[in-house]
Length: 282
Ligand code: ARG
Image (tube, rainbow, N blue to C red; front, side):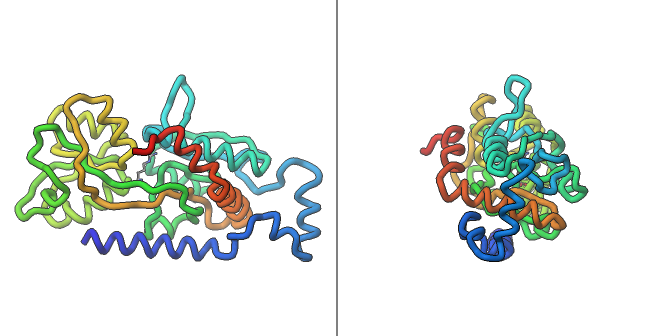
């Protein structure tokens, strides 16, 4: 079952890469072609940016700022890897960034309705989501891991799949941790899933014994475990994922511009440098 989802994920990534096909060349190179001449004079003169964003001159980013180190609140401000990536993209495009904080499962709707220009939320590319939104190039990988109490009877991911297993699993609602454990375990009669609005709430439920484990992305897992005593992350991984930006399917012009900017930031090492300031290599 796990293998099947991994396969679907890979497929989704290949499809989303195919969707961005032909954009490997940096924008400058594309603009040297004859047909791009009129376009480029339009784009380089006059106002800063004529891109079709929700608010003129602003790149509105939808996120759920409860997911350190990708997005979290510090000193009343939303900071983190995704906020910095959005700022770098916006700078290239001559836009300001406005960040809207919301429930994780409201982000795709915000993008679809055009309220937000991009969802940046450590969001995993999945086939279902790819039907709703256009995913940008992937800028990071994530791993679904299992958090348990130090004295837990659960010692590996396989324990969750064992015959007769009946664990209560805490997750953040509608994240891939929720989706996969629901399909793999709850639907198979091997677990009950407890869904929380925030990952940290699921971790609190683990601490107080309301759930037996939490399935969540590895980086926030590390951050949460560092703050709550008596918890640990299992060595075995549940599944490997790709994070990407989610954008509206009907705004091809903005998608192109943002995706080319992001690909340049990936190629020149800016994205890795941002990630490295938040995540120390082990
Ligand atoms: N990677 C997981 C997913 O896409 C979890 C993302 C949660 N992000 C957040 N900002 N709360 O479902």
